[in-house]
Length: 275
Image (cartoon, rainbow, N blue to C red; front, side, top):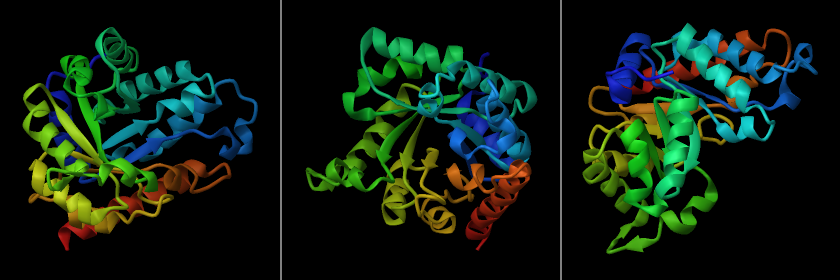
């Protein structure tokens, strides 16, 4: 699988417009929450996620499979199959591999090969802590979305440290916007649980895409996030919801329940940017 010539930014912009949506559905499979009909099925992870994908593909700007949720289940082959399913059935929807990789040299090259070669991702999340040389192999092969201000409470331990009069997360945002964007296609991760800081990042990075996790189960509000972080044209954000969509229902109609929550979340984003 390979990404299209237009690149991640182009594919994302097209998805924003085509589906009129800022919503990204995160794919974090947890078999303990699957419907009973999938109990014991050897391909349960793929089947569950594929049904979610098919039920929501016209509502989203991207899908974001979380690699640890597959790897812990020894289901990397099902993740590969899922990415192939998305590429074949919904080729206009970008895939963001949520892997948060961060390493150097030949190791980073292999992680990039995994993300863009094996899984056919359009973009991969990375940890910026190791600096520029750690992301160059990814930028040579595809797009990155770098952690900036994360939604977890412990993110403040380092991200709010003062560096020459500004918090570290803003220093990271500036580095990504001014240096890394010259090397390839980039984006940033800023949690929905920090709308004021999301606004500061937007002011720092211009129109770069921002992945916004934390909506739903983590307590982030989609409307607040869009108000704080959307670009002047009402785009620019990839508002992720995972568990709230995936596990909206536990019965055989789980995909229909997921679709209903996805519609509500998509519409909350629309109301905010239109209002």
